[in-house]
Length: 83
Image 1 (cartoon, rainbow, N blue to C red):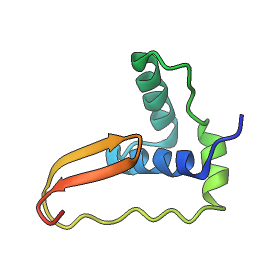
Image 2: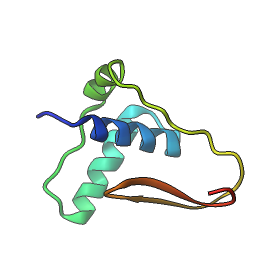
Image 3: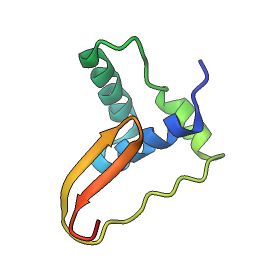
């Protein structure tokens, strides 16, 4: 299966937000898909690791308190101090 660059970037964002390793992130994403009843699967952690070498993934550093962290189909959005 082929995954888009955005899918790989979202994987890395979730990994950074929750501070867990790649295997746990893969399981987490697959659990979310199962709870939603979606017939989707997460890219495996080996594929994500290999693809990340080719991608420019920039995760902004947050300065301040995060009020809410939202994730939807358009991406990651942080609401709070200094939006």
